[in-house]
Image 1 (cartoon, rainbow, N blue to C red):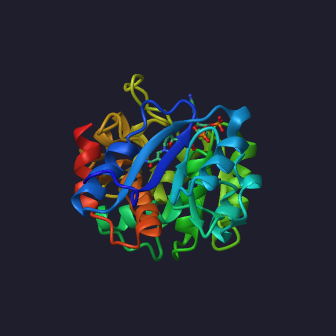
Image 2: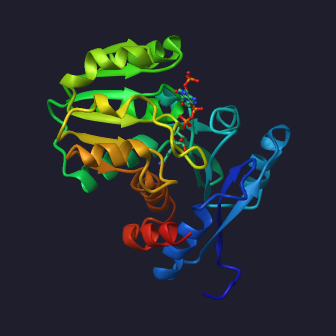
Length: 279
Ligand code: NAP
């Protein structure tokens, strides 16, 4: 595609941003559909966040993704926050409509679509253990608790944060908060286990968020990490005949949902997945 005056601006705003795979993923998708957009990485220091947002609005950017450390801090600079982003307390996508900036969050829906698509799971009646209680856990909890699961146990190193996430889940389903040492008591009855902690991520790949020998046979185990492709937890789960899923799908689907909001086109999931996997 030639860069002409019609080309619109998209991007991702974070700090640091050098390792983001979003530009490769979105530009591959835009090229494959011959759409007149370009997607760049914006390294924005926290003290310049407000200026960066006003600048992007002023130059007519169509929208952008928001990542660490700006997902919460950006909210006061936007004109409208969707209900989902408000409940999650974080924005990962901004859409600019006629100069108005709308904050959205596609992490929860992205996780749900990837989980169902990749594992074939029927969520109704599932008994769920979520390990971790950070931003990613909030998105996963929001998605699963509204999808008809029987109950959700949140286990986290810091119990107080697990309690906050369990309280979010309790709006839609039964929920309980425990420390990591409480996992052994509940995991035997669970049918879906999700790791939302960073434990097991490169370079500390020989770590697991809990003793994997506790995993029941044949359940679904999902790990939000995608570097490495298969964490120690997923290796151990596979050895127990579990259906496994890594975090690549969530990353692709959260991006695909944002892409659709900006361009109005159905996102080419396979192109996006291959572009990220190649990186
Ligand atoms: P976060 O808000 O910083 O939360 C980190 C979580 O990990 C907390 O629950 C924290 O427990 C726990 N944790 C960290 N180090 C630990 C350790 N040594 N032992 C036990 N628990 C530990 O981060 P986040 O944004 O939720 O991200 C969490 C993970 O999800 C990261 O690996 C991230 O890459 C991944 N993620 C993937 C996607 C995707 O698209 N696939 C999207 C978002 C995030 P405490 O509360 O006790 O500190």
